[in-house]
Length: 157
Length: 263
Ligand SMILES: Cc1cc2nc3c(=O)[nH]c(=O)nc-3n(C[C@H](O)[C@H](O)[C@H](O)COP(=O)(O)OP(=O)(O)OC[C@H]3O[C@@H](n4cnc5c(N)ncnc54)[C@H](O)[C@@H]3O)c2cc1C
Ligand code: FES
Ligand code: FES
Image (cartoon, rainbow over all chains, first blue to last red; front, side, top):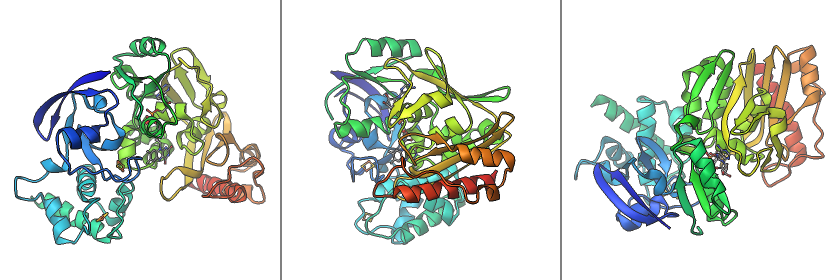
C-alpha cells in the first residue's frame, strides 16, 4: 500500500506518494537527495540520523514518512545560510569537533536542540544531552567544546 | 522491514475500528520500540494503527490528588510538565532519565507500559506509585498490570488511554543505568503515601516486582539504615552480559537505599 504525504522540509513544501513502510531517513536521503542525514546504525542507537520534526530532535531512522505527514522537518542542509556556516557549524570547525565527520550532522542537529532547550548549557548538561549521539573518532571532548562555544556565539547574536 | 498498511486514527474509536479490521494489527505510538523490532523481523504486523492523531490521548492533567497522564504523552512532555514536577517530582525525574533526548521526544508512556520491557523505567513508577492504568475497557490496578517479560494484562484489542498516579507524600526513583542504552540494569521507585510504603523494582527480574521485606522494614522505620542486612533473593533475577543475578540482587538493595535517602 502507499500513502500520500505532504510536509515542509527546510522551509520548502514537499508532497509525495510513498510505500507505507518507508522510513523518513530513506525518504530524505533517497527521494529528496538530502544525504547529509546519515544512517550509522539503523537500530536507533547512534543519532547520526538526527533531524528536527516540529522543532524537536528525533531519529529519522525510527520514524515513518507517514508519521511525518503535515510536519515541519529540518535537516542539516537547512542549517547554514547559503555558504555561510551557522554559528554552531562554525564552532565545530573552529574547535576541531569532527574527524571523519560521519556523526557530525547528527551532532549539530542535537546541539541545536540542546541550545534551544537550554541557551547556556554547562559542560555536564551537554554531555548528558549527547547520550543519543555516538562518535567513533573524537572522544567527544572537542564536540562538547564546540557545542559550548556554539551556544555562546548563538547567545551573543 | 516487511510491507504493512499504515492507518492514521483520529480518535480512540477510529483506532479500535482500524485495529479490529486488520488480521494482525498493532498500535503505533512513538515507534521507538516497535519500529526497531519490526526492522529485526521480531514483529511482522500487517497493519500499524498510528495513535498520534488521537488528541484525547495526549497531555497531563491534575485531578485533585491524582496526576493523569495520557497514553500518547511523550517522556519529554512528562519530564517538563510543571504539574508533574510540582506534585510528583520523582515521576518527572524518571521520565527525564529514559534513553536519550531523541527517544524522549518520541517515546510515550502508553507504549512503554504496553511493551513491558523488563528493563523499562515506567513500570517502576506505575507499581511504586500504585497507579491505575485506564484502558478503553476498564481500569487496571498497577499490581495486576505487569505479568511477565513483555506481557501485560492488556487484551489484543485493548488500548491504554491514560495512567492515573495518586500523588504520594514523598517518592524517589534511583536506577543503575546500562551505560549504553540507559535502560535500567536495576531501577527502584520508593514511595510513601497514606496507604503505606511501596518499593517497586524494575530491571532485576522478568517483570517489575515489589520488594515486600523492604516495604515492611521501611514501614517500621523509614530510613536507609532500616534496610541493613536485608536482601532480595537472587534465584529468579535476570542474568545477562550486563550483570549477574547476584550483582542485580545487590543493586536492588543499593538503589533502594539511595531512593530512601533521596525521599
Ligand atoms: C536507544 C533507546 C534507548 C531507550 N532507553 C530506554 C530507557 O532507558 N528506559 C526505558 O524505559 N525505555 C527506553 N527505551 C524505550 C522507549 O522508552 C520507548 O519509547 C518505549 O518503550 C515504547 O514507547 P513508544 O511510544 O515508542 O511505543 P511503540 O514502540 O510505538 O509501541 C510499543 C508497543 O506498545 C504498543 N502500544 C503503544 N501504545 C499503546 C497504547 N496506547 N495502548 C496499547 N498498546 C500500545 C504497540 O502496539 C507496541 O506493541 C529506549 C529506546 C531506544 C530506542
Ligand atoms: S541511524 Fe538512526 S540512530 Fe543510528
Ligand atoms: S567524527 Fe567520526 S564518527 Fe564522529
